[in-house]
Every structure is written in structure tokens, then in C-alpha cells.
Length: 177
Length: 177
DNA sequence: GTCTATACGGAGATAGAC
DNA sequence: GTCTATCTCCGTATAGAC
Image (tube, rainbow over all chains, first blue to last red):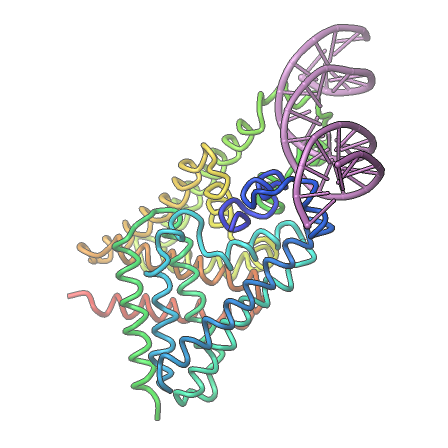
């Protein structure tokens, strides 16, 4: 999506209309303001994310560690886009924070979706007391990798870090009483 | 700086002129274009960063581990700004990447400054072969924390992660042959 | 050097024909 | 529903007075 590729503020109606192949005027039949488009984009991302997370859960066959590994591997799977545009969630929340935009909360809710889902997996693994902390830690690690690879475009680095996160996860599992 | 607080694209000449207390017209006596201002801002950040890194080195008294700890602690020291605006380097490079801006390289050079400095410290610690990898890892960790705390504004999380990075550093030192 | 006035383009948004 | 034409505002940038 264009908001992801060029940022929300910098994407104009002309850009959008051009991409969707309708005229600028017609746009206002579907959305009254640009903010309304943003809200719809975030809403749609929330839905897709929900579905993706649920899909990982189901594909893991009740193995939370595998579900978490699916999360870790988005870095590898999406590395081409991340190199060019960064993480869609991280860069959007950062931009909206700077714009002091109304939809900031909704964008953060996207992050919270990942956070709660990861915490749920860690809890299912038996990490009752620190599930949320582990979730935040892993989310931060993957955000950090996304930021760095966006700057340095270093594939080897992504591979190393994804592996390191896997090792970290294994170590957390071994710690379980 | 305004570019940090509101982003480069979203900051107008009127905003800047207002902040510096001179008229918009007078601005063009000092800079010919907005991009020239950006270049000057980055240039100035490079200088400040160089000085800061050198200062850490000197304050550490030839103890690279302490120098690295100074780096880790910027997260704690600047957490108020980071909560509101994110990391100045990370958010700038991310924005310029999306704008496909000319100055993208210069902004990344800012990141590279930290990277090389950290690698130098790790090398001084005796990590000859993986100094750069360790530098990138630590840089990514701190970027990740900055992104998360910008979204969630969670002080306890920063404290935990800063401590965890300290522990990680100690473990790397113990590994040295 | 610093100001005011203004040109010029592009942005979001509206009106109204079809 | 989709279009073109148009409005208004704001952004960068320039001209020229002082």
C-alpha cells in the first residue's frame, strides 16, 4: 500500500487515485477525508493481522513455540519490503506519533495485537508471570532488526538475528520449571 | 529540533522561521532550499555525535565496556524525548527512506558512525572477528526499544531492556578467550 | 542582512454535469 | 457512481524595498 511505501503524510490524493485508477473527485464518494482513508487502511490491517496470527496459531498445531517462530520469520519472508520501506507497523506508528495524529491510538492497537498474541503464546508455553515482558522483548528485537536492515540493507545481518532470536526462544523454553 | 519532533516533510518553513524568530523571506539568505537545511541539520548531528562518542571514550578511561554502557544508557537518559518522538536517527532514516530522499545516505552515515564506534569498542575488548556483528546487534536492540517505547510509553520496559543489554554485554566479555 | 509582498504549484476538498 | 472543473489553503521559493 502507498501509505506504507511513501508514508501517510507524503502520499497525496493524486497518488492514490492514480494507483486505484479512479479520478480524484470520485474519491470523495467513497471517503470524506484523507483521515477516513487512513482509518480504513488501519482497520483493514488489523483484520489481516488478526487473520495472520490466527493462521499461525492453527498451523502450529497447538505448539506455541512454532507459532512464535512464525512471527520471527516474517523478518526473513518480508525482507525485500522491509529493506525498502521498513516495518509497516513500526514506521506508521512512528510517523503518526510525530504528526500527533488522531489515529495514533489505532495504529498502536496494531502493535498491541502482536504484543497480546505473543504474550498468549508465551503463557501457553508456561511463562505465566513474564509472558508480556517476553512478548515486548521479542517485538522490540524484530523492530530493531527492521530499522537496521532498512538503513543498511544487510541480508546476512537479518539471517544472524533471526537465528539468534530462535536460540533465544529455545533458551526461554528450557528455563521453564 | 523541529525535524526531529515533527518529521522533515511535515515541518514547514513557517514553523522553522517561527521557531528561529526570523521571517520566512530572510531564511533564503541563509539556505537556498529546504534540502540544504536538512543537509546542515544532519551535518550538525554528525558533529555532535562524533563529539559525544569521543566523550564517552574519554570518560571511560580506556575501558571499552564502560564506553559501550554509556551508549546503552542513552535510552534511559533520553527516554522522555524517545517516548514522544522516537529515536532521532532511526526515525529520520526511516522517513528519508520512504521519501526516497537524496540525503538518505547522509542520514545513514549517522547510523554508521554509531556502528563503527561500537565495533571499535568491541574490537578493543578482544572481539576481533565479530565486532561488527555485535555492534549491529546492540544498535538493533536499542532501536527496537526506542520504537516500542514510542508506541507504548512503558518506562518499566526500558529499564528491563537496558538491564538486559548490560547483562548481554557482560556475557560477551566473559566469552572472550 | 532583514523585511514584506507575491509568484507558483500542489495539496485536500467541493460542485455539479453526466 | 464517476467524471471534470474549480475553490481554497498552504507549502516552497523569489523579488525587491529598506
